[in-house]
Length: 198
Image (cartoon, rainbow, N blue to C red; front, side):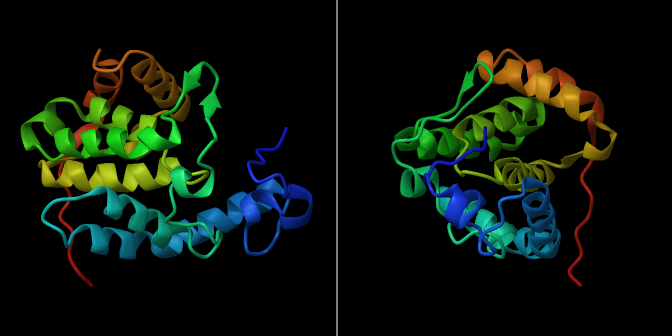
C-alpha cells in the first residue's frame, strides 16, 4: 500500500511531487539527485548559525528536497496536521509534538560533552520527531553530522550496516536513553573532518 496522506496519489503522484510521478523507484532517484545537488549548500547553511534551531531543520529539508516536493521545508504540522506516522511498532511524534522532540534533540546535541557521549540518543530524538512526510533520514543525518562535527567527531556512516543501524535505531525509539544506538555508533566514531570552503 502506497503512503498517500493527501488522498490524491492517482492524480498528483507520490506526495504531490512536481513531476506527479507515481513510480516510487523514480521518486527515489529524483530524491537522491536533489539530495546530492543540495548537500553542500545544506552544510554551508548549517555552518552559519552559532546555535541550530528548529527552523534550520526545516531549511535543511527545503534545500535537500525543494527540487522534488512543493512541501519541502514544511513539517507535518503544516502538511498533515492530523496524521500519525507509524513504522512497525514505532509511533513517531504526533504533529503537534514534532517541534518539542526536535528542540530537545538540538538542546542536548549542542552540548558538546553530551553529543560526544550520546550521539545515538541525540539521533533517536531527532528521528522520533520525524518532521517530514519524506526525507527525514537524510535531513536528520545531515544535521546530526553538523552537531557531531561541532562536538569534535564524526560518524563513519560508510562503515555502518543499514540493517543493523535501523535495528539499533528502532530499539532506541522503543527505549530512549538506554544506549541502544550509542552502543551501535561508538565503534564508528572518528575525528571530525575539516570542512573547507571551495
